[in-house]
Length: 295
Image (cartoon, rainbow, N blue to C red):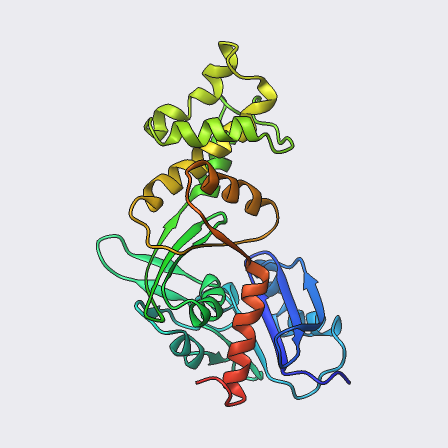
């Protein structure tokens, strides 16, 4: 049996990741399942959890903690949203135990006001990051990108941009669908999109994805990354003006390169951190709290 602190689980809408975590936060083992919430409800969340744990070494009686959509109203057991502002330790203390299980689930965060907002899952990355950087602006790209303010060790405000949804919807339109086939990263086309988004309203700039190809000003194979640059650039345009430094990009895989490149195009230095590493670190701190080592 592996000596470990506990099991951390990132349980999203379509995928589940689990780590057997040592006391220093490094993973002794990991497992993954491509199981969505709908399928988990049909098969039973407890059954899916057992399948996930079967991919890990035996770890009887270890504490388990999860973050993500498993704690949503339509998940396994609701972990209600906490109001923002909030301290990292407050997020950890608000974890809810699933009835009939030893699994605890971390809550999401809600922000009220004229533009209400919610997050669920990303707050776990921020538990660890805010503990390290008490004052910073965090960008967490995704289908619904998050921009988060941390001040004096507290999560004080955040905003969500449906950038991934917008990009996907634009690609499916009759005007753009034939032009935006996925292609290797094209720095030149992406840069053009980012730069144009800073000076032209997005609703007009989007049509340039077609008109530049029709007029011979852009090759068809560049359209995918030009459109990506437009949508990501529009997001950064609103956030970077007046954004408090340091700027931290929490990203993984195919999203990291374009976002990091866009920060460079707009001449704003950014520190890049693996979002998966940040999630594991947040789950580790939550497990340490259960063990009485994190206040």
